[in-house]
Image 1: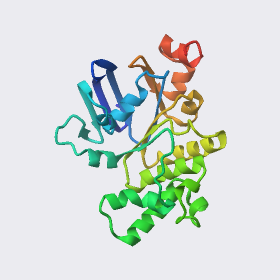
Image 2: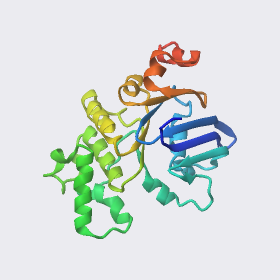
Image 3: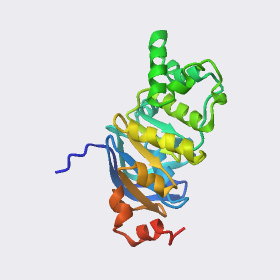
Length: 255
C-alpha cells in the first residue's frame, strides 16, 4: 500500500470550452506536500486542468467539466452548493506575470485578510510579516512596507504575489508558469522558495521549462493534445519514460 496522501483526485474527467473538447479522460492523483509539474507543448491542456482545481474556468463562458469528477481538498468541485470563495481560499493561485495591486507592499498582503473580514490590526500585521518571511521577501521589504509594490523588481513582485497567497493560509498553491517572465537569478530565487514551501503546502506548477520541472518537482505529468500521456516520478519520467511520445518531447524530437 502507498503511504501517499492524495489531496487532489481527478477521476476520468473530460472538459469542454463550448463545443470544443480540451481535456480527455484525465485520471490522476496528486499527493499532499509534493510539487507536481505539468509539462507539454502549448495548447495541450496543462493550464486548463490547473484552473479546474480552483474553478477559475468558471470565468470563461460555457467552459465546464462534462464528465468524471474532480475532488480537491475533500471538496467535490461539481457540487452545486460549493462555495467557490472558500475553495479559492484553500487553493491559491500564482499567475504567469506578477500582478501586484496598486497599493503598498503591506496592503498587498493584507488585502485578502481584509476582504475576509479580518479587522484585528495586530493579527494582520503578524500575518503580513510571516507571509513575507514565508516568501523569502521580508529582509528585502521590511523597511519599505509603506512603499508601492510597483517599486519592487519583477522577481520581488512575483514573490510578493506568493506572499499574498500565503497570507490567507491555503492548503494548495497553483502556479501557472510563475517564472516565465523572470531572469535566471530571479527564477532561481523563486524556485528555491517553491521547494521550501512544499513542507507546508501542496504545489502544482505548469511550466514550459523542462529543466525547471526536473529541478523542483517530485512528480511530473506530460500532456499532449488534451491527454495525460504519462504521469510518474520526475526522475523516472526524464530518465526512462514509459511512452514514446514522452521521450520524443523531452529529447526535443517534438515541438
